Length: 238
Image 1 (spheres, rainbow, N blue to C red):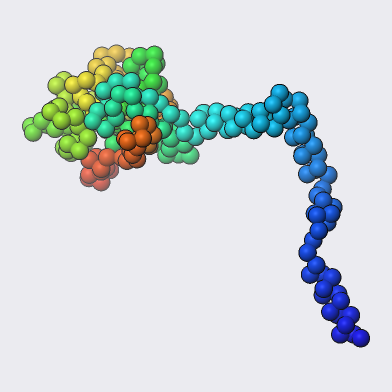
Image 2: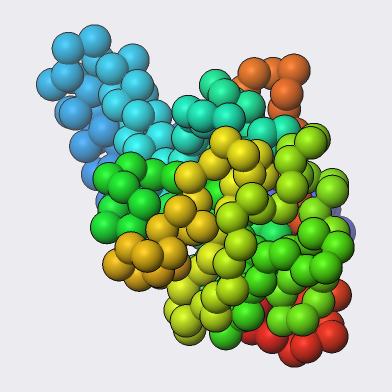
């Protein structure tokens, strides 16, 4: 008898929970939440479909404003890597939480007051404290006394710069150049302007991480290793 009772209790405890049991365990908060969603859907023209679309749009807006934002490349100043019409995805979290732009990064920044009233995309060649010179005896860019081989991204046939310069980048600022040097308006062209061609780190929108469109040009944009030896050799900022 005791054995039968034990089996009976075991069978009862292992019985699948029916739908009524599930509804019973829902708390008042869950029921209230579902009721609110239903009321909102009933109020909107198109019902749940319209609500779904609005939620998706809100997600896109929040994602674009705080995480990843698309930008279209308007000029050939960053060829050969970025072509006119390319859409790049800019990582807006790349320089949050204490991280900062590094030499070799391709960044999008607000040029208002420095380059012009627009957003620009350029490559970081100097960060705060860097001594950037062009050109050395071999015609190459030099950062903190170290010559930089830019051949992996420099536009074919271009020299590092047709305009000589010798600058020290202030702390909290960046010295930026386009990869297509002969077709780029960048820090070199604003050396005599307010700010000396330098762009405050605070005006950087984010780091260009991906070419998203056209599909045939989809690729990940990685930081150039051309400047790696500068940091290792001199212990410069960046």
